Image 1 (cartoon, rainbow, N blue to C red):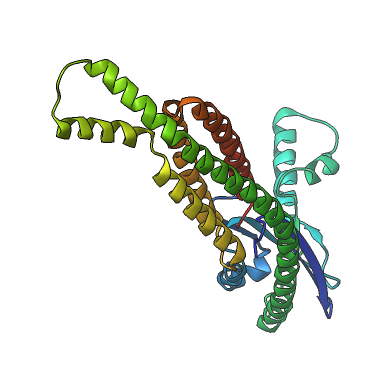
Image 2: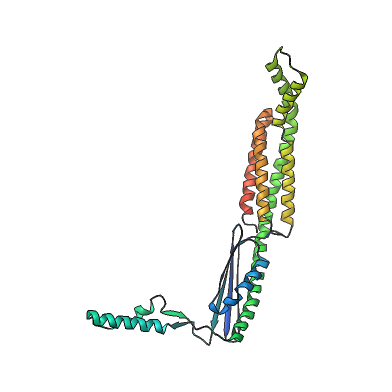
Length: 298
């Protein structure tokens, strides 16, 4: 089952006076790039929750945000020491320079550091209570995120299989064109050798060696065989449960390489070579389409 790397989930729960909200956002990334945003109350739980997320997600940019609120403490409070320092500085400057008027407390409260979140609880039992609640919510959020990623993955898998079928069809067409072209190519090769040699004599072994070399330069059987093998492996990875995005991308690189080799040999195959070039270009377009879609696969 293919899973998309993108998704979003948010859950909220309460325990006594405490309320916790967990938000997960997942985006594309080559590796697992995990960012946890925790309030000071929950810092000690970061290693545990990192490990929990890694159990569910192997690849992608993931942001996990944890918000804690309590009805028993204000969301914000004034940093009294900061305001006192501001007022002392203002009074000192007022005496030194002879200023008149009163300090603007509204402006002071807008200064960075003038306000801060409510004081964190230092009670161990409260921290454990919050940890247990957040544990449960994080697991629930990961479950919702998994559902969304699987739903998007199912649509993505459908598109991938459709494009893969197109790859296999173009591969079949190339194989048929190759079979049709070989007799014409062999005849063309004999005529070409006769033109080059004329009445000159050449050793049969040497003639056979040159003919084999020229034939090898136009033979696409190995590339077509490897192309089919890569397509089969691609389909198997799509059907599996393991994260396969990196391996799928590698297979597509190999398929593109084989197609380029086929295109380089096609001009030697007489009239069928033009048809092989057309089909090969269609094949490259399908492979590029697959590579763009695979970037979303975990």
